[in-house]
Amino acid sequence: MMKRFAVTPALLPLALAMVLSGCMSLAPKYQRPQAPVAASFPDAPASTADARAASSIVWQSYFADARLNQLINLALANNRDLRVAILNIEQARAAYQIRRADILPSVSAVASGERTPGPNDSISSVYAVGLGVSAFELDLFGRVRNLSDAALAQFLATAEARNATQISLISSVANTYLSLLADEELLELTRQTLAGREESLRLIQLKFDNGVVSKLDLQQGVSLVETARVVLAQQLRQRAQDANLLIQLVGQPLPATLPATRTLAQTELADLPAGLPSDLLATRPDIRSAEQQLVAANANIGAARANFFPRISLTASAGTASGELSGLFKGGSFGWTFAPQAVLPIFDYGRNKANLAAARVGNDIAVANYEKAIQVAFREVSDSLAGQATFAEQLRAQRRVAEAEADRFSLADLRYKSGASSYLELLDAQRALFDAQRAAISANLLRLQNQVTLYRVLGGGWSAAEPIAQVSAQR
Image 1 (cartoon, one colour):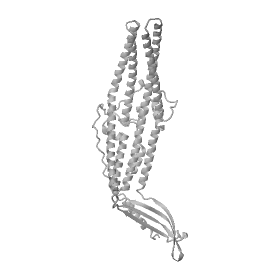
Image 2 (tube, rainbow, N blue to C red; image 1 turned 60 degrees about the horizontal axis):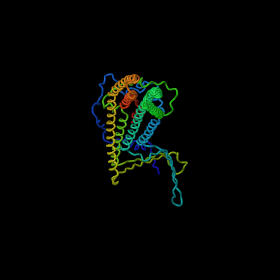
Image 3 (cartoon, helix red, strand yellow; image 1 turned 135 degrees about the vertical axis):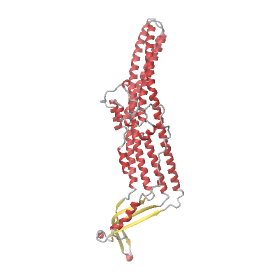
Image 4 (tube, rainbow, N blue to C red; image 1 turned 30 degrees about the horizontal axis):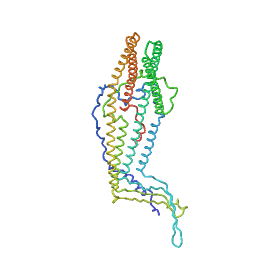
């Protein structure tokens, strides 16, 4: 039977419990680990005072190609990997909201009826209607608060992982697009080379038919033509595969209304300042995600420590009670109950110690993953800076090689036509020229793709996500 009392005193115990809840936290004070890398990048160019950091350059301005911009927009809207990353954020948000709801009591409407046998074969009835709080944990040692903080950190880590996915997606679309441009240039070069070799073979066939050259020269010409056809088939296959990859990244067939494309030779990307390794802690979403995982592991230690202390739960209700349904809302029928319960672990076969040990090991793992993320980022930036310092010179040298081989081929052709040299010398000049021209296109592709990679590894291609700011403000 519910005890009858005034309304205001009935709510005082619950109000006091809410005030005391969360007064203490047993989680270790969080300290960001020292970055296990050097203070500066090797091969980093001298930065200028007005240089903009890569993370502050939006991808729309860094990639000035209108066709590429539209492809990236389509990928951001349709790519399935990015869509899964966004859905993971929503799932993590829901998990955080569940944990956060545990901080406050859940109030429910309660209706009950009970009929029990009494003396002399009588039956007594009790009916009650009201509001109730069931098993609300009084969080004196911060267990519930730490679990909520861990869920929040997991949510923030998931949101940062989504940003990292966006960066990788933009980089993949740009690099695949550049590969397609290189495929087109290589195809055009191969077709021109094949046409030239077929014309040379036609002339050699005429000379052979008239007894001017030997069958050795004829077969060498045939070999050169068929080699060009092999390369053409390879290039056609490579272009088809790159186009298929681009369609997968974009998430839909490529529209016919895309802007006209540039050639690879017309494409240029700006050099980027490296900054300091410490800048990566603020700009790389993967590092930020790893740090949030570390924050979550730190909070889990606090929750595991709280398991050693008493867990106090409260159950309370307030409403009306009567022996008859018709009397539930009559005057004088108000009543309330207040039932606290304290549970102190005494003997649990080491369960709480094991949970605490697991939480501490989980924290050590999170520290190692965080440090590894920094080291991986440092290496990626260092590799891209080394490429920035060398790919441009490699391209210049390769183009000079192609120019020299073009001159050698012209001279070899004149010498062969004048009878001063054999056809073998001309064939060697043709092969060397073709290889040098292909190498020049590949060197240009590597240079541009390295710039895309440098933009990615420096944290370019994302902006702060609004959900993170909104949830952080609620913390």
